[in-house]
Amino acid sequence: MQNPLKDFLYFSREEKRGILILIAGIILVFLSGYLYSYQRNRHLFTEEDIRRQTAAVAECDSFIASVQKKEKQWKQRFPKNNHKREQKENIVLSTFDPNTADSLTLCRLGLPDWMVRNILKYRKKGGRFRKTEDFKKIYGLTEAQYHALLPYIHISRTDTATTYMAQLYTPPAAKDTNAHLYKYPAGTVIDLNRADTTELKKIPGIGSGIARMIAHYRQRLGGFHNIGQLQEINLDFHRLKPWFHINGKDIRLINLNRAGIESLRNHPYINFYQAKAFVEYRKKKGRLHSLKPFGIYEEFSEMDLERISHYVCFE
Image (cartoon, rainbow, N blue to C red):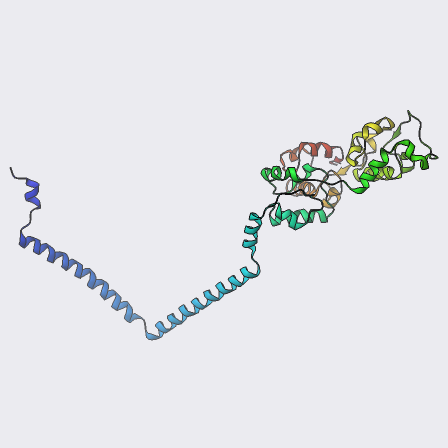
């Protein structure tokens, strides 16, 4: 039985020859059209046009070559990318004090250049990291970076504070030279926010240095609202608590709707970035009525807002 499909696809020798000639003819038609178009376009341009086009291409190539040369020289002179690559490869985690570490030390910790510049600028304007948690508030520092650096952060106490502590805990027998100074008897209680240095020195265990330190910190705060704040200047408030009482009405408040960045950041509880956040909020949204809006800001922790709340008003 014959296959009809095979009969349909079968061509004789003459038919095959005819098909090949037809295909060749079609190809020649397409090629002739392409060649005609090429020859026609070629004659449209004069020799002057070709010369100008060649000159323009040469000028463009020359310009690109000069730019590449300048770029190469610039990279050799300021190898920024190479520096970043080397910095990433040469991270050295070691103990550092954020209040004294230089830019090279901070870069070796893996901090980017812009963040190092912000830290140095913050310190230059008088900002200080008083506790390890303060370093977490650096703008742009991620949680992972902070926890990686946390074991290496060491904030040194000043020699002055060490001297004051030594003076506070010096046994009475070692203070023979001050034996003639009058001291209050046990049971005496004075106002911590109103006592001057002369009165403070009458408290047993407090000398001239401690008295000046308390008065200076009280001035910066605007007044104490709690005896426990004495530990912020490295004093044993448990030992001093029986001698003091506090009148909260004597606290000097900061008007958050009027104070500028410099005025705000001078307070021990407000750093530069927090002061900036207050001012920027006023500019964008108007008057402040509470600290609640800042609960979602990364610049503030709950402890920060609680401490600040005792020293601000919204008049």
